[in-house]
Amino acid sequence: MGCLLSAAARAEVVDRVVLRVNDRIATLLDYEERRAEGLSEIRSRDDLQPDQREQMRDELGNRVFRKMFEDLLLLSRADQLSIHPDESEVDAGVRQIRESFGIKSDDEFAAALSQEGMSLAEFREQVRDQIRIRQVIGREVTAKIDVEEDDLRRIYRSQQDQFVAPKRWRVRELIVLENDQVDTAELLRLAESIRGQILAGRAIDEVADEYSKKGTTSGLVELGWVGEGELSPALESALSKLSPGDLSEPIQARGGYHIMQLEEFEDAHTLPFSEVQDKIEAQERRRMFAQKFQDYMHNLEQQAYVVADPPPDAAGFRTVAGDRGDADPYADFEPVPAKETKKKEARPVPETPDVQPEISRDKPPPP
Image (cartoon, rainbow, N blue to C red; front, side, top):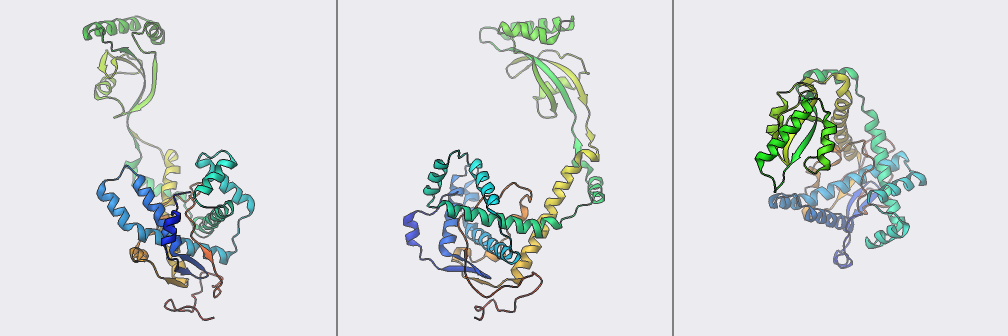
């Protein structure tokens, strides 16, 4: 649900067909709507340097047209495979998108659609198309990815430096708090006194509770497991000298004087295969998906009847890599793009991807 073209901007676009894939078409208005959404997103990002923003604007036309092209290829393939989601699937998709935008009521949803110049029926059609696309990809790409445990173990053995857990400490602490009315020397004396009480046998949580009620210390803070680089150098240096059960000297750091108790320590070690198998498998599936999806889309493109008449800023769309190849194939639901497809009667396309249409790309198909 992005920002679509304004009514004035729509009026300035002389609509025409700019892309045909088998029996599906996209128009210049479809392209301009998508491009307007892309520009709006680029403008809204505050993490971009000026040169990055300019480069993204320069590449936007090709990327938008490429995405539109891929969607038409996949929807045409869904037609061939007779993939038609039922209404309950569309309902679930709509509900998920509503929830992702924090839309609670039907009235709020209707208002959001109205602001985009879209009816509920049009929105449901977009959702339906995206479900069809995901089902095509799931059936013809994701389902054919087979990862064997032996392959995962080979990756594990060859890349063990990537599966090293750094040393870490399980720590709790109390902090003698900084106070504008008390000088540093007095704070240090108090911290040393508190430490002495704990060493003499008082429980650290009891001492922390007593002094926190006076406002001189924090309560007992359970830091849990902390790894290298997560604490200040002074605190980490003090921890490295302790054994489990030991209490640190008061250390001046953020907020005051810290008194830390080391509960447990783990040295750096290589994680066992069982702990990283799922991570390796997910990475390998993403790698295989990227390659298989690229090959699959190339195959669809080679077999499709395509007529393209892109605007000048999208003339290089065929040389731009598609975006889905780097996406996680297990994402919950792909965001719904702007309206992009219209179905039109044309010459029937082949029923299987293994048959090359015997028609030229340079002229329309015969009647």
